[in-house]
Image (cartoon, rainbow, N blue to C red):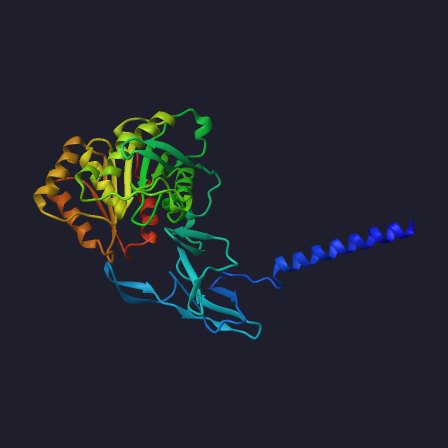
Length: 389
């Protein structure tokens, strides 16, 4: 009997020891905090005892001017981190202005994310660590008390000829209210997909906060995939098609699908107000171009039109003809947002001038900065308060 008890105790201690070792391996020894946000500075840490160099680059590091396909632009420059005797690399920066920043480490020339930071974003094919500094500018980027729902919805798109995915936000209380809601169709930019506005744009958090504070009307927000060849984001590993943009058969294929496929699906499956005065469309960059195109091709469909970081070019006669169609159909709000250092600034100015030339009431909302999510989040936070009022 004693022998059996001893054997059982031995086995118990062995299992406990193994689990303790497993736990120690999982914990990784001493706890490393990164990023650590203090009252006056933020500190980043990365354990790499055998690395020769570790740098950090992000939206809060100094910038250098580099030549890009869009022309000269200010881009974040890498900053060297300091290594201590344990192999822990660290660096502190003065606390940046309240904003959502992305960053990564460069370890011996290889870009890696912060392993101690679970807050990440996907930007197309890149994953980046996130630093969110609290403050007045970012108060609506944090979670509200009352959360809306974000659904991944598959729908048939006869126009494009396949099933496609979109994200649909429904506000807090939608499931139980019994009310009908207006709809914002929110379009992403080049390189993005149906996830972009939710992940990088914090669209759900912004709308949750605005609605909870009584600053915005409760609304549904539809975020489609603007790449006609994709069924969904590339993370789904689905087959893609290539469409020749110069082929007239494929001209504005996705733009047409917004009105011919997406709107009918939303109005057939959700409790919405199926009228122009309850529809808004907005998009950034490429999505801003889609916003201009869909309102020109289907004037009178949307009463709220908000192109962001986009404008017009080409002969005035063609531009005026398109805008006159929008004017004759009528609208309630025409809101254009752009940063003064954006590479499309001249095009945005051209749109402002064309709207003035055609006596179309509008708002030209000008900010600092360029073609960045810092601006696009700010724009949604601003024009979102003007919709459906």
